[in-house]
Structure formats: structure tokens, C-alpha cells
Image 1 (tube, one colour):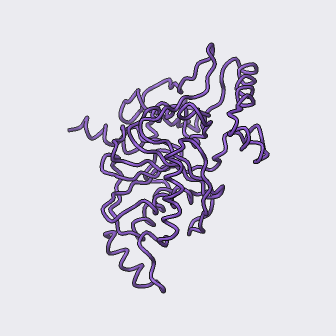
Image 2 (cartoon, one colour):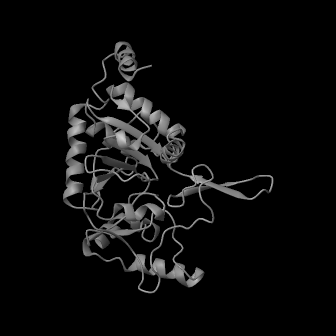
Image 3 (cartoon, helix red, strand yellow):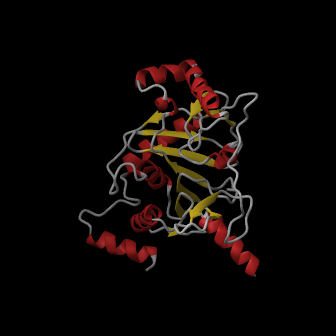
Length: 292
């Protein structure tokens, strides 16, 4: 069923009628103002009045509110969950946005103007006219070492990140290397320490001087922050223990890619492990290109 026909069904059955993109205009303006503050101060967490959404908190309400506040009638929307277009989270968000706005939804990254993602950045390089919205469960990077909110805010204000450096050092002392995986902390614009959402280390270099705008939304924690285009995003690292991305022992079993983030599939019968691209749309496009 076409998105506009589905929207007509929802609107006809709703009393009172839903506003375009579900949120009322005052809420959209408030979210946009918070996003603009985040763009003006890269990496800084801006509080906002997170609304109740028809999905549970922790399932992407922050990202969804950002997407609904930004989306217009001529936008094209894509939703992915850990690289997959077909997961429950991605499908439900895509259907909800289509029903509430009537905009076109796609799986092809290049066709989208707004891309909402959980825990991955698409493998395909995004353009300056595209906006990436990342869902964030825990926006405070210092929470793992400092549970007191007032204290962590003071540490951000003073640029006091010694405790985070100590945490990384402890990992090196125990394992012989920096062992932190997803949600690796980074300094944005040479100033704020930022949690990049639980993206793998593989995706971190994509944020550094990226030509596109990245917005981060945490609905449960009521925080919005941003990485504007062409902004420095530098992972924390020691001079003798450098930041590095994940390595994989074999290429994608479906498309043969060796330059993408791969998911491991373990054979329950003891047949070993195989790997496939986490970004399903990118993998499908590679396979179609090889068959053409």
C-alpha cells in the first residue's frame, strides 16, 4: 500500500486528526531549537522536553522525535537497525513515519534525505544534503566512571577528562590494549567529550570531518547533541596505543566485501563462523552490481 493511502486511512480514523508527522508544531520548534543549539556547540548535550511516543522509551524515541521534527513533505526517509533495513525496530519506525507524514520511505541509502539509525552508520558515504539521525540510549560518556550528574556536568565544563583517560589506561593494563568496543568516546571540535552512540569502532572515522550533519537523540535521557559537517571527531588514544577499528578474518560470504563492518554467524553444529555485511542495503547493492 502506498504511504499516502496509508496516511489517509490513519487520518480518517483518528479523532482528533493527527498533525503532519505526528508531533504538534510547538514541539517540533522546541526540538529544532535544541538541535540548532547542538549544532552551534558540537558535542554538547542540550536538554529538551522529550514527548511520549507510541513506542517504548529505549526503542529510539529520541531519534524518532528528531526525524519527525525535521521531516518535510518532500523528504525521503530511511530507517536501519544495526545495519539492517528489515529488523523489527527499523520496519516499525519506517511504517510509523510513512503513516504519520506520507513521505516516501526507501532502503537505498543514496535515495534518502533523512536516515535514522540504531548503532550503525551506513557504509555508503553520505552526501552534504543528507542528515543522519542516531538513536542514543546513554548520551553521557562519563556515566561509566562518574554516576553523579552534577559532577559529570562540571567535568565537561572544565574539560576534566582525566578519569576517562584513566579508565582507558586500566583497560590497557589489564588486557594489553585498548579494549573498549562500541560507543568509543571521542573529543568533538577539540572540546567536548562525546558518546557517539553504540556504533562500532569501525564507524568512528566516518564522523571525522564528515560532509553531512549528524544528530543524536536520547529520548529517555532527554538529550540532543550534534556533529556539524566538517567537524573534528577524534577518538581518545594514547601515543603508544593507537585507536584502531575492528578486523575480520574473512570477507563477506554474500558479496565478498573486505572493506565493510561484518556480522559474525556461528554455526550451531560446530561448522565454524561465517561473516556477512552488517549494512544489508550496501551488501545487496554490491551483489546486484556484480550480477549486472
